[in-house]
Image 1 (cartoon, helix red, strand yellow):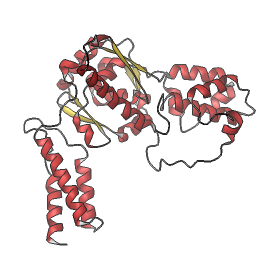
Image 2 (spheres, helix red, strand yellow; image 1 turned 60 degrees about the horizontal axis):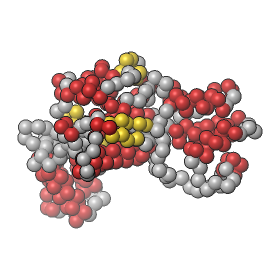
Image 3 (tube, helix red, strand yellow; image 1 turned 90 degrees about the horizontal axis):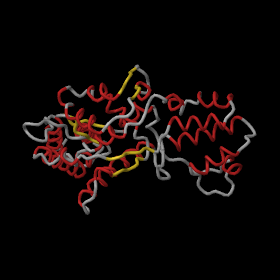
Image 4 (cartoon, one colour; image 1 turned 90 degrees about the vertical axis):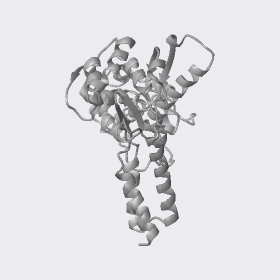
Length: 335
């Protein structure tokens, strides 16, 4: 190994051993730092990365560490700017299952419940929607999130990660492997949607409500598609995955909120927005992460996998109660 390679490894080791703080008095992790450094060091050591590429990577890591140490990563929306809003989700689990029971025969519905790819969504009647809890979480997004795909939130004195890893544990969705789907001729498309280029939830709902299925297999397959459109990919853009749709919706929510503060003055207390993807995953993450939030806004917990099946949520959650609960999060250790 050359002297320069040794120097790079030493710098990589220095980065991975840093306390990763945003200031000397307030320790917060630098997102993805340890993983990136570990991967870089391994590739350099095994000769899989050229010296110039390694130099650039390590320099970028050092720059990010320097920014963190200077306290440049901050909350995007301070506490003083968190105001009331009405938050809607496109996910309505109870209504989706009710429609499916009306469209399918009892035998078809029972077959649908056993499908491994979506069966966890068939048992989510107790997981309600708390827009006020969601709103108070996303308003605590930090600029750490710009460093990678993970989202980083400030809860109390801690900086906490919500990434595809947590999303997978919560939803039970397959979050590994290739996302490439080859374009092939579909018998179902030709049979049920002969004049449609792309199937939307609205088209699918119309077809499901009017069809007399020739066989149970077709009924179950179209029902699977309807569940995907209605729950993990609610109102998502074509071609995206559930994690990507959810992450984009969270970031857009904060960006739009910040933009509204810069625009002409209006009654912010009456603002509203809707969230695509599967934002319920972020709620479950908050319950799993903070004992305070869980104790205030859930009514029952039973250990289950995936994690979203563990929680029964409270109804009629008020903004003032949620804001007060988040103010006390720092009094109890975030998991």
